[in-house]
Image (cartoon, rainbow, N blue to C red; front, side, top):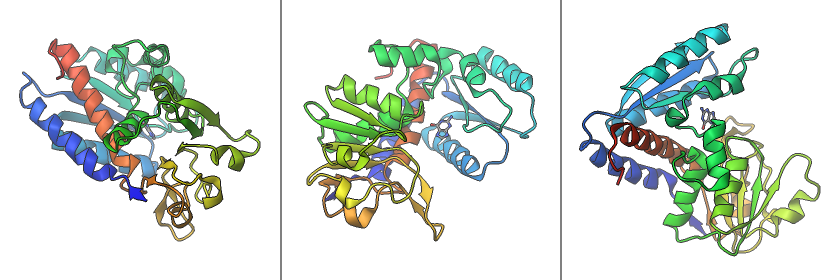
Length: 283
Ligand code: GUN
């Protein structure tokens, strides 16, 4: 079994970006909005700030109290939409109860929607049109698969989870590369049997212990997108590593697999947004 090293590939991607950023007339700029004090979100936002520094980007962070009114956040997004030094705007999810996430995400200008959550970018993704953004986590998974010489073409790909952040865009990217895709979710019967037919299994549910050895076909590629804490408080994904390692040909670790690739994907999107705003080629 080969462990797919997302940490190493993300570091490589970030240093490639750093070299390209040095040639731009100004730094790419990312604004991150964090509402409330969810500790996991805080950790993610800190990571994004570090990544921006490593890639030579300008970054701004807005930490707002959980009680902030929707209108106030909309006004902030509006201001950032109009700023020339800000190429990307990210509203960290989940938002506190009472806020309408959809309305806030829809307010971000599509050319600054580096998360690929705006309907215009989601529409471009699903219809195969160029000029949108790649969704960070699924794009990071594809990059990792390519790096290890794995193509979805002609393979049965099973995606566990149907979220707008991971499951749905993951299915779109696998399909775009000629995978035959099954999306499973909480109402799917016979989950174990369906997973056991997967050549490529991507789990993005958020339930420690979900994917056991008997659910994995011999020689499968298993990608674990989840970030959970087990009973001892240790970070883990959905996959029972010890069992699945006996069956899979390739497996992503948690941590150090998909997580760093997601963050590298965000940096890449921010760089691409800046190139578009500056009218220069990203390559
Ligand atoms: N929360 C968990 N994952 C993500 C992500 O990819 N983007 C945003 N904005 N929030 C998240």
